[in-house]
Image (tube, one colour):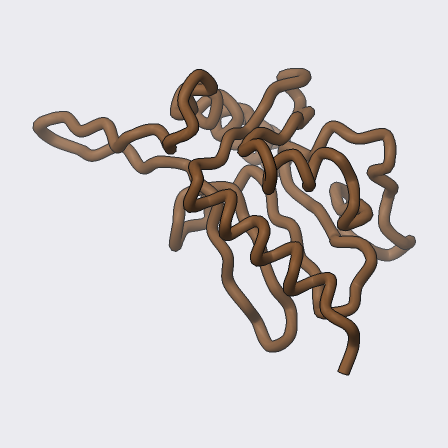
Length: 155
């Protein structure tokens, strides 16, 4: 029972933490909130590469605290998306059999991904229901770079 309960509680905490760290009325990322004892990490968009695979993640940088991961390789027409929060899109499709349970595919041209790059807002859905994840101007450029990288023709 604890194998199921602990990850579920952690996921709900991550979603709640994400909602509290974002201010949707401003384009800038939420600032780090510091107390005398501990600095609270900030959720944000981060891009990394593993070989030819690009990984766009929304979470705390350099940690396992991720709400969503989007991956692709050059020439892909769609990206693999997984996490506790997924883009709110009717075009999101469950990935092939044998994949992770919460893994799905989304076209790179999907309005949810394009909105994040253009407007800095992505509609999402998780266990807590519908919400939005924002992106600062710098993060929007990271997202645009990710989409451009994925859209490159295969070598």
